Length: 332
Ligand code: COA
Image (tube, rainbow, N blue to C red; front, side, top):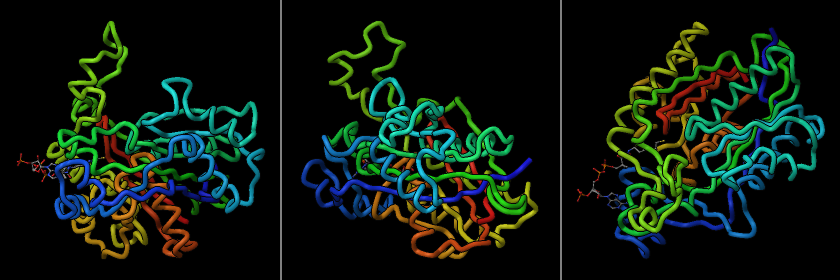
């Protein structure tokens, strides 16, 4: 079976920047608390009527296609990862397809939150490996800011998340020593409600009530301590799994791109893996946690900044709601 490679990457973030100081004006929080606990300084929020989850994804996709030297019409499939789709249904994949002006190729939506991009990448990789498709577009895009509780009640969650999109175009690799070497996916539904938005769900006779809005169950809930504890275990575990499968050691990694959950989690992973800071990519200070978009935005920036070069060993790793966690090892 042939390998797939990442032929192009791109990202897009909405124009509006919201700083910690801006958040201080609307809830009881402080720049110091947010920086100290998360490393976040600012994030981007969408503009209603301008940005949507699907059109931000399309913008990132256009850049990725350009880098890959392909047209949208060359694509064989779209895999779209998001927890914040434009509509309840249909998924954002078909909207992105329409936005790119292409018809009839399949568009698959992936719902695996912070691990969504690596899950989507793995799906795309399998289609290329089997020879079924040649060029697959993988997108992660999120608009969080329209679904957060900006009162003091929601501060533990709302200060963390930001909006943005990233994309990658996968194509067949020229050799089996290059491209995506392996992907590793995991989940543990035992902890499903520890990081979740419960309402409006289909399991209640009335999906949306005034009580849900008043009680705040329409907003994301996060048990921060539990998420933190599991994240710092699962990240190193799934990175090691990828390295072992390919007979590499942590010191062989040229660039580790962890999901941008929290700077403290990233620093912990860096220390645990024994990697120097420059080999672990971080941009959370600029964007906050953009869930499915965080890894492709980081990957796109790392390539743009020349921090990933041909031949480098790149590891992507994610952990998030579900709980789900995943990794991908790539010879660039
Ligand atoms: N501003 C100011 N104070 C805040 C705040 C905010 N934005 N959010 C919470 N607080 C307060 C709490 O109310 C609490 O106050 P109390 O002691 O009076 O009750 C205090 O700060 C400490 O809260 P706690 O939740 O114990 O803080 P923490 O040190 O555990 O940090 C997180 C909270 C969320 C930063 C931390 O748990 C974390 O990083 N978790 C992982 C989150 C993550 O990465 N999620 C994404 C996974 S994909």
